[in-house]
Amino acid sequence: MPVRRDKRFRWRGLGIGSIPVIVFLVLPLVALLLRINPSDFMATLSDPQAYQAIRLSIVTTLMTLVLTIVAGTPTAYVLSRKNIPGRTVIDTFLDLPIVLPPSVAGVALLVTFGRRGLLAPVLNGLHIDIAFTWIAVVLAQLFVAAPYYIKSAAAGFSAVDRELEQAAAIDGASPFKTFLTVTLPLSSPAVIGGAVMTWARALGEFGATIIFAGNFPGRTQTMPLAIYMGFEIDIKNAITLAFILLVVSFLVLLVVKGLLHNKLPVF
Image (cartoon, rainbow, N blue to C red):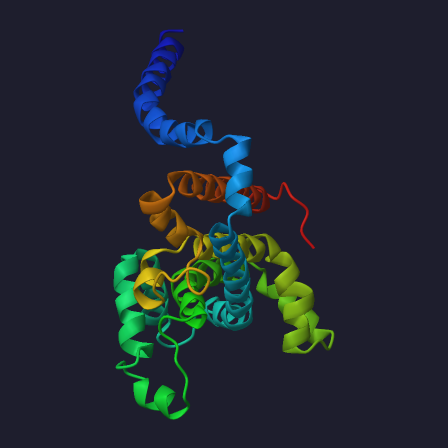
């Protein structure tokens, strides 16, 4: 009995000690929710500049997601095989965009794809301008968001039982068919979760975009950039767009947590 009582008091103490940080993290989100009213919400959606920012965000993030899945899936599969040479170095480089300040990512992209960047002679010869265009928006999102998918998918592929893949190969399945029929379905929660997280990270991208693509309404201004501009022009639009991103982020995390705990149906 004394031991149980001590544990009970200990857990109560820890619970009370966690209240300040929980309140600190939750209170600003609640305050944002309380500032929203239906009339401001509808007015923002009908505002041409806000509508353009929402549309550009949706289009560019979907393009980023498709490019990430197409190019990132083979990369994740290769990284899931631990015997490849230089795996640790490659894995470290893939982690860098996650931990780098977004402004550093923007500068790195600019000195690579800008008009005076590393690839400028090639791009100028092909008459291709990337910096400060919608292409730069996609590349900025891709640079900072793709690692989330690659890391998650690689973890999912690594967790698949190799014996199941070998059994499919013995039955005559090609490596590609084995991947489609065995590896991918078994790792689908991690793959889908990584894809959702990548889309959410791309949707919220700000720092790299504003440096590499600029903040031009109707051309490169995404929702986060419109929020930044809204604090100088129209605070109601900024709050409404922030509310939309908050709701989307919450739903994304809810879906990912459900997938990773196998609470949602996949495939």
